[in-house]
Length: 333
Image (cartoon, rainbow, N blue to C red; front, side, top):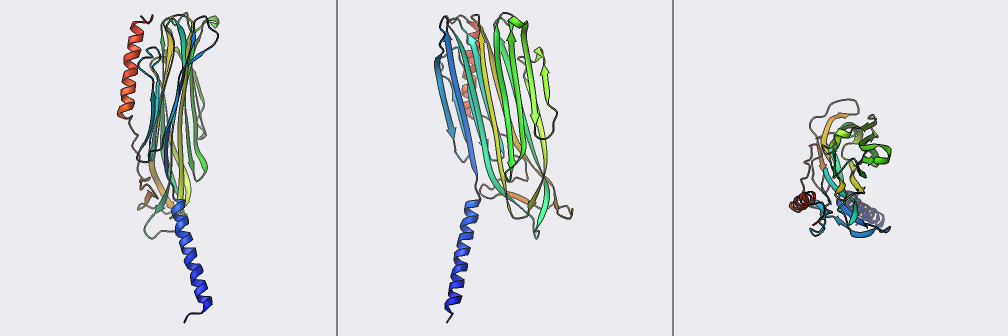
């Protein structure tokens, strides 16, 4: 018969084993989160008080591929922005369209934005390999900013902004923190008919860019950043990934009927795989896996950037039709 001491020891070991299993289970976590928001206001001619036309925000936590999107009612023929985000493990796409214009009876202006996030955990494993090592994580961020003035650009003051904020944390440490900000404006009193500024700032030591070029209006300005991040790790241990992409935009204009400005921002972030896996002594490891502990996503490979959903494409198409109608008939009749 086993002694009471042995039984107590085995019981303690059993409890410890259960707790270890539970701890491992709860430690491995993953989540997707897509959000979109929009506010549209108008300032009636002769009134000092703006009127709220539309305001909404949505959030989607669908674990199969999160999507959130907002589009305005077709009845608002002068204000046609939309925004949305789509998220998968390893990739995020965000889109925002702000529209500021003056159809004659009021000055419309809008804020539109979206954001997406994925969090995941994966383990680096290789047959018969334990201990520590190093690896290089790869990722790419891309943002396109497009401004389109409407009406008379030599008599109208307007301002619009677009931005993309990219963050990647690995085991709680910020490895990517990029801020791409753009502004497009005209100030007739200062003799500025149209000007665009671009500011790119990166945690990874890239040179900040500030650019003024009126020719960029309507053609879009693209920022592309590639990241190669050397990281230490332990084979078999969880590696935490937290990626966030946010795209805000604003647009407003005055003062003549038919004048305005569109601001469109479109950005994505993509995980591009893992290379240069080495042991602590520098020995190269070629046979390895990097599978999400919950999702099974293969972080050793590049992700696929999610395309907009059918609903999102429908909203964008509807906006284009309404925008074309507005340009053909700026008086609103």
